[in-house]
Image 1 (cartoon, rainbow, N blue to C red):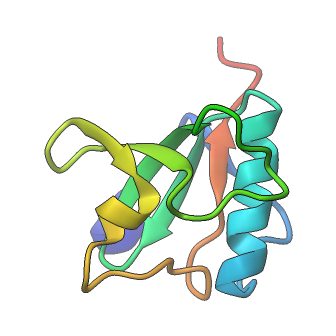
Image 2: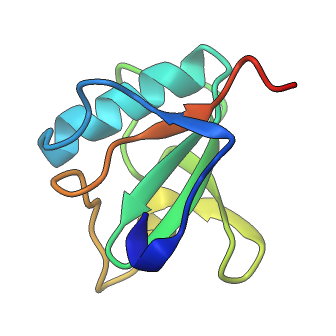
Image 3: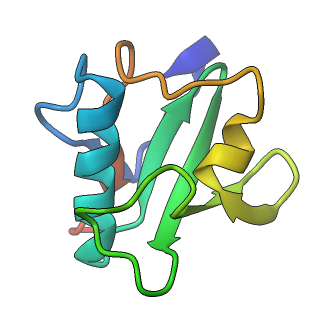
Length: 104
């Protein structure tokens, strides 16, 4: 992880490292549509995507439709709001991550 951070209760989603931002977001929304919260890396920060805006399908979702919990302030906001004016999806350096299904 970044600066030594680890996520021991998650698995990297195979095939997501190095995707284009659009493909990365599409995979994240697909995971969300199947009830899987997903860690999304944005510039110098990680947020937890927890859902999609009501009435929006994974196929049509944009960063404005992805709801995230931002650990920086504990607020729920859209992915676009979490990115603000200076951050972008960092799909080139980090895989999407989901919770391990076999926690003991």
